Length: 179
Image (cartoon, rainbow, N blue to C red; front, side, top):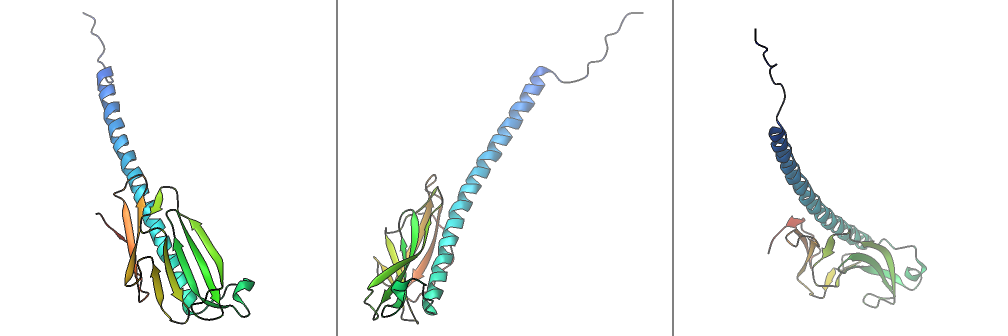
């Protein structure tokens, strides 16, 4: 009786290499998609955070929430709040003075830098003043009627989010856009 070779079990080297190559391609695509998603979320989160700070500042001005700093007490009353946007940060400043329009003292009450990879792309700097007790809003440098605040990714200029503040004080929702 002739000796029969045992049946081969397993995969050849070529089959294994092809399978591993396909898996590497799929994983590479998944990682690239995840990084793009993460970048979009960072820009969106920064825009929504700034939008919330604008709304909070508007509310503080409406109810005349005075900071504890001595510069806003005594003869210098709180007249409003200024939001100052530059390429990489937002500052909120209390405007204090003896009468409306004469801001003798300014007190910085909040400062935040944008996350790495996010920048403000509007007119820089942009200032939005909310005055106390419904005296209104003024937007610099564009002036009335509104200002659109745009935030973009520094790594992908196609990732853009924006919201608008108009001279009546209303603030739109954050939306994605392209040029």
